[in-house]
Image (cartoon, rainbow, N blue to C red):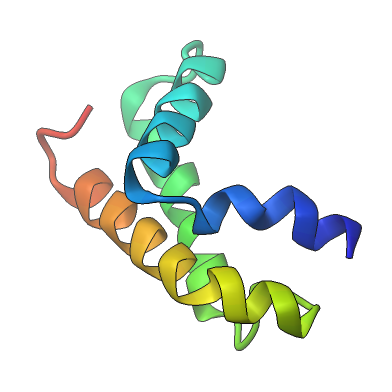
Length: 84
């Protein structure tokens, strides 16, 4: 359940998620753009390939679909060469 709470941000509204993603990039501003893109894409793909992002059914029901949409949009943006 603790992990689900930590991952709840992934299923936030698109604008809140976008701010979160921007803050993640800011936190890793010392990483070169191509390296950041590669690493972040790996992380996002790892989550998207999971059968379940959240362990608890209440979190899955509340956040899973939006989390997948948010992460896919971020992944698509990162894969655009002009994104960073």
